[in-house]
Image 1 (tube, rainbow, N blue to C red):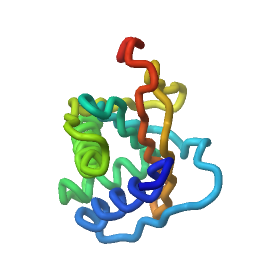
Image 2 (tube, rainbow, N blue to C red):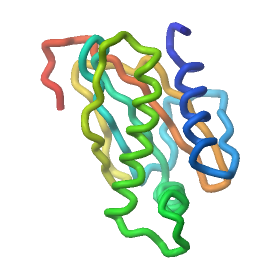
Image 3 (cartoon, rainbow, N blue to C red):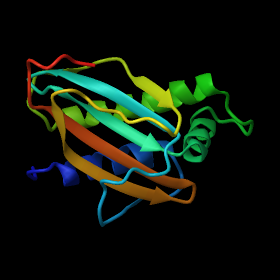
Image 4 (tube, rainbow, N blue to C red):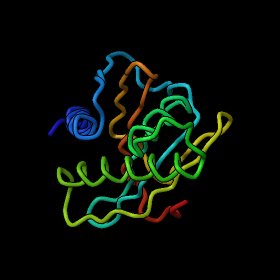
Length: 155
């Protein structure tokens, strides 16, 4: 395992992607600190021996395309469908990443937010991995967070 878990996160995301979607996702190099064009953020908390979260961020365009593919429809998905699809995608990525983290760890329920003018922070946690990907519909950033202050309130 790498110190930042970047390779573990990338391998997990690419594996889940290949299972669900039939178009390529490419890992990007460079600085992953700037998020992609946001529109949707999906987050799943990890509790137990590993405390933190897995967070996916992408544009609304990418989120809608992934939703349409997951639900096998040509119609533009409604927000509730996007919430369900991106929450499930985050849950699948978190569940697979969890296997390389300290055990036992459990997944919380997915949380999905829409918008462009917000920042997601997990109090008392820091990113131990941020990996960016690109596909024909936009960029995806996946972050693995680890709680550094167990006394900080989880929000």
